[in-house]
Length: 114
Length: 115
Image (cartoon, rainbow over all chains, first blue to last red; front, side, top):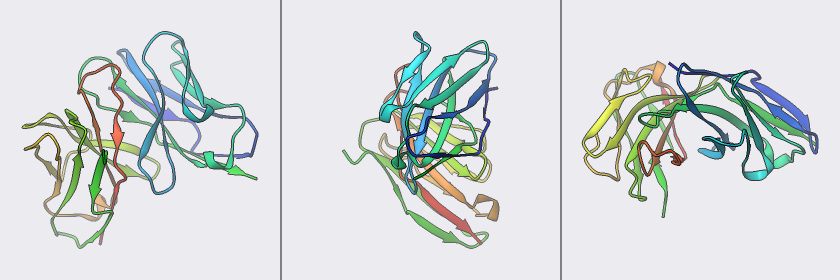
């Protein structure tokens, strides 16, 4: 079975500061990795995904994530955040073979302070 | 395209009542799924479908039924609601059920309170 751990439940940062949201996963088989964002009172939107190839993945809204196989991590970063980045962020995995069953982490609430 | 739509947006039920959460997509997607979101637990898969007439259980299926009679619709039924089913429910879909490049599209969610 797969599992995902997001190491911080809440991350407060000041506007224009850099941010890193941490995600570790566990799986006995190869997986694809995802980051989703949920703005207040909305559904989830895909930020970025790692399927294969370059371990640095760029997504929407200036976010990027780095896949580290040896540390089984997929941390999300942004060099300078904006108030509009206030949201909940979810890391997720799915196994490469078979149906698209996503396994999500617990979520990290990112709060941007002016 | 309307994308993935869910109705109702909000619902309050009493313990023991039944109801159906509706999910529809107009993108001709093969794969559809239901998740529940609870504080501190992320999203957990309830049931999924890889095509009309084919459904399977996810991580937390107990207390929920599904069916998929058409490609477009994937309703989630609560036969006898319990307070433990108070949650936010999300429906999601993607074009292919195995595709490597596939992205799952999520609906806006249904907030359910069971008293």
